Image (cartoon, rainbow, N blue to C red):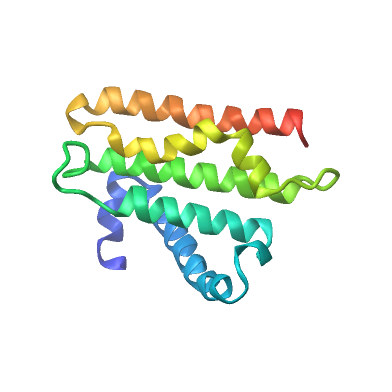
Length: 160
């Protein structure tokens, strides 16, 4: 893993941290899958449910590719980085919302419902065509990143 870390960090210094965080989510999901098989998803705490849902999105909408589609047969590095930033940004903000809701305990389901539009766009990011160009994709991803932040800010103001 470390052999190309310097190269990728020269392209984007956030890459290694984002990759490690995504890998950690996937490892935690693997650990939780045995528990889920034995006692069911309902027995998990809210942060563990967040991990399972984010791992599913990462596997199905980031790692899984379909080479026969225009949007998925190639993914430029800048788009990959933006997708990682948005996945991890959403995950981090959801985790913060779960841990900081001391007076009014939030569930993962409540957070997911409040941020539904942002949550669904995590899956939609892959449909941005590389042919649109870096400037257009960067703009869309940046606006989406702000939408994620604003959605969680709204959650904090209205619920917590």
